[in-house]
Image 1 (cartoon, rainbow, N blue to C red):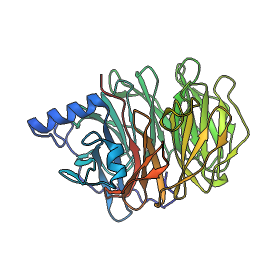
Image 2 (image 1 turned 180 degrees about the horizontal axis):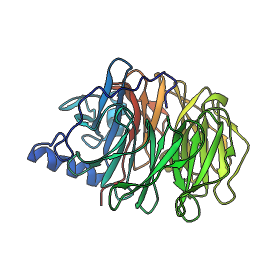
Image 3 (image 1 turned 45 degrees about the horizontal axis):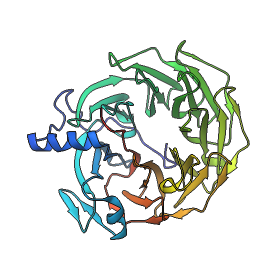
Image 4 (image 1 turned 90 degrees about the vertical axis):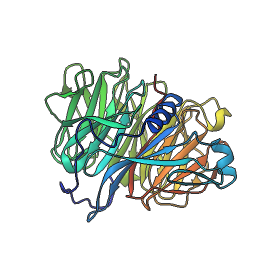
Length: 365
């Protein structure tokens, strides 16, 4: 959840369950190809207090080789690439104030939390059509999917609950009480059924057993936990503590926190890769957005590397499926590519609507 105050409203049209922005036949074919390649990025256009957003913006990262686009300072505009840039595509209407997005492991579905409508929108990545709206709790602000793809968990920031979603039936279960102001969630653990929920005002993370639907004892972390991620091997959770300028690791086998790792001012987003920049290092790496920087955190030795200055106040980050490029969503309505091998940034892409989250789903299969 952004540090800016959000006034939640139901202003804004809601699309019908099966009639949301259907593309043309040729457009649908291209969307399906991008989904299969895993080269489509989705940005939540949350908007502003007086102009709430209602859409996801798509960015086709496969329209041109991205490394060349960064080197050339490529730009993206709606309708096609310019000067070697990726294609900024159509918008997908989901609902009022889209704040977070997650994908199923097979890349077939996107799940979008719409704060202004207290709902979860389900998007088919082959067509970018909304196929369902599911009512959840008050002001849903985060969503995660279990490793087996059967369950999603939605964090409802304004009623201190999480809502489980059965992804085979697309139905919500009973809400589970957690801590104060839950604003991030991740799922992992030895059997893939342990959810961790960041309690923004509780300075803690609440574990939830998805097999029983029960919350456990809160785990103390730093101040204002803002984002969560699971290490590539599934053994460690990482908590971005916005108010403490640190990342706290949590052992998912014992649910014990480790020592906080200073990363820089106000971390807001996390993404993980199985190896370091461009595969040069064999060590898994977390990429942390802090202020106007992207900070690498080596997960083997828990050591921070050299920050990359993005030049925009960062909100969230996603890494391409080949691990070569990070895309940083900025609060100034842009997304900026960062070449993780060279540590250089490309030209920012204007997407509008103050992006709140960015996701690059796995290839559709």
